[in-house]
Length: 281
Ligand SMILES: *[C@@H]1O[C@H](CO)[C@@H](O)[C@H](O)[C@H]1NC(C)=O
Ligand SMILES: *[C@@H]1O[C@H](CO)[C@@H](O)[C@H](O)[C@H]1NC(C)=O
Ligand SMILES: *[C@@H]1O[C@H](CO)[C@@H](O)[C@H](O)[C@H]1NC(C)=O
Ligand SMILES: *[C@@H]1O[C@H](CO)[C@@H](O)[C@H](O)[C@H]1NC(C)=O
Ligand SMILES: *[C@@H]1O[C@H](CO)[C@@H](O)[C@H](O)[C@H]1NC(C)=O
Ligand SMILES: *[C@@H]1O[C@H](CO)[C@@H](O)[C@H](O)[C@H]1NC(C)=O
Ligand SMILES: *[C@@H]1O[C@H](CO)[C@@H](O)[C@H](O)[C@H]1NC(C)=O
Ligand SMILES: CC(=O)N[C@H]1CO[C@H](CO)[C@@H](O)[C@@H]1O
Image (cartoon, rainbow, N blue to C red; front, side, top):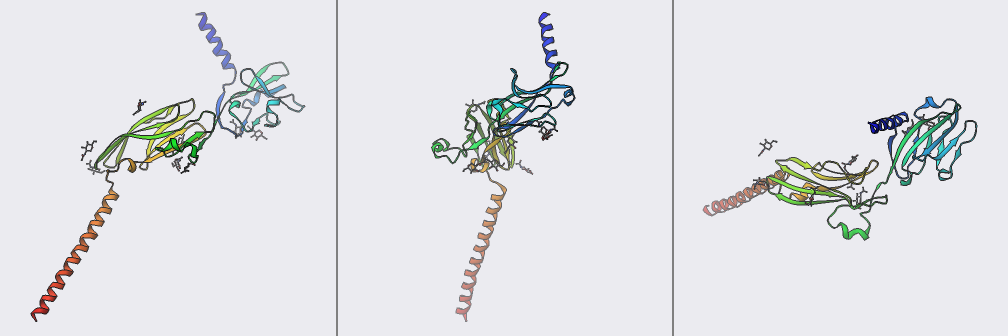
């Protein structure tokens, strides 16, 4: 009972603050943090943007004075005096965290005017040109690394292929350093079906997914700000599967060959007949 009361109190005291919306930012980019509760900006004694739970100060301003930017942020923030929004520039992974706008009013009340949970994520970098890695990629199409510290090498490999002229099925494994997913594809009579391969989270906020699109298998490695994909065409896996295009080409070839043969045979017969007629004269 006592525990429930305490829990209830905790929930209530949380609810009094502003809940933080999560914003994903590409490493190296800027983000503009706005004041969302503009109504609390009355009778302001002092205003601060703070970082994380310990409320490390980013910037403080007392209306009428110049804003004070704290040393860790000097040169990389822009403050809009008119609406109290702050732009953080060239974000790095270490800048991930909760930013809160804290207002102290003339009467001494402390309230929150905005709260953001910022997550900085790296971009996936294509390193398939790098020779030192070429030994690793003999069976893969591309080698990609996110530019964050956690490198991962997504691979797309095919196994258990069953292939004949009317149907083909195979399993693909789409993998990064931290996780993998399997998916089974079947092609019957020009229709594709898939089992598995749903989006799955490996390291937090990083995903793998497999799907089929325009006769290719796509292995998609993504985070919230960047993605990359490895692909394999189904034709390269299912060699025997006859597609209608292939069939018609074959048909045309057969026709041309047959017509050619008939013309040649007729020509031979005609010449033979002519010779016979000439001999009879
Ligand atoms: C702040 O407002 C600007 C302009 O209205 C908008 O472009 C930006 O996305 C907002 N920032 C956030 C973190 O929502
Ligand atoms: C606050 O002011 C800045 C600079 O004048 C502007 O870029 C930004 O969009 C404003 N934010 C909102 C929420 O209006
Ligand atoms: C990655 O590199 C390969 C080989 O150089 C290239 O074919 C492919 O288009 C590149 N992909 C991206 C997304 O740059
Ligand atoms: C092709 O393979 C499928 C399953 O792998 C099988 O059901 C089908 O009978 C086979 N067809 C032929 C013509 O061999
Ligand atoms: C995926 O397939 C591989 C090899 O075919 C197997 O070792 C692995 O356990 C499978 N993973 C899952 C999640 O089914
Ligand atoms: C293949 O599909 C076509 C139309 O999509 C249908 O008319 C035909 O009966 C199908 N053949 C088989 C063997 O299922
Ligand atoms: C890969 O996944 C991302 C995020 O889910 C999505 O925006 C993108 O369009 C996908 N790309 C492909 C080729 O499927
Ligand atoms: C790295 C890679 O293979 N990227 C490809 C992802 O898919 C798009 C089309 O959907 C291609 O244009 C990219 O080259």
